[in-house]
Image (cartoon, rainbow, N blue to C red; front, side, top):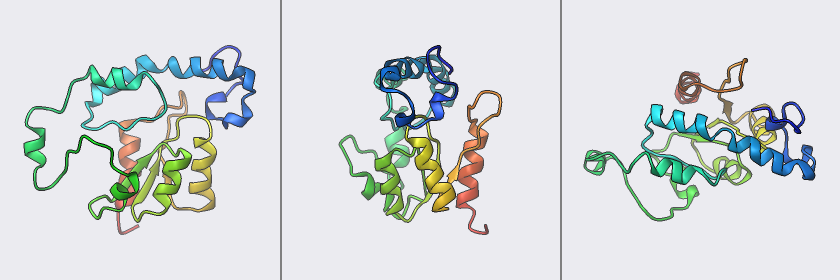
Length: 171
């Protein structure tokens, strides 16, 4: 969201483009998305949430509940539920992983490049936008999720379309 005191479009700029004295204002802008993220999580009811960009997401997601009842039993033999840390490179190189949906942080960007899975990008802020541009325009190894013109939000349909695009072997 646009926040007074930030340049127009600051949410899509590299962190180096936002003057250091405005960094606290940018943090306020991110915090203003909390309600929107809460609604999205409640409606999508995801089975898994990866995060590393905001301090308030873990408690917010925790309030949504634990794994659905019987989930571990349903995935036994075709999936894994693991409660400890696992190296992302190991996950991405596993033969059952065909697509990685990433925010395109610098670490995830390089980890995805050394994997053999397809890459879909949903940059959120800061250097993630130029990283995504590098991956899609320069290297041509990833696809961006389309966003709505009016508010910059992406939809579940646009995420599905991007995943289908990279996973369709005929293209």
